[in-house]
Image (cartoon, rainbow, N blue to C red; front, side):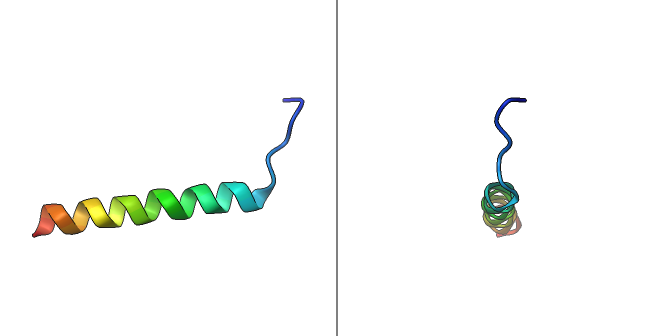
Length: 30
């Protein structure tokens, strides 16, 4: 890859995914 994404971007994306998954799980549990 010519462009390397900074770890901060990856961490931010992971946090968004986790948050989304947690919200989805919460709705499912409810």
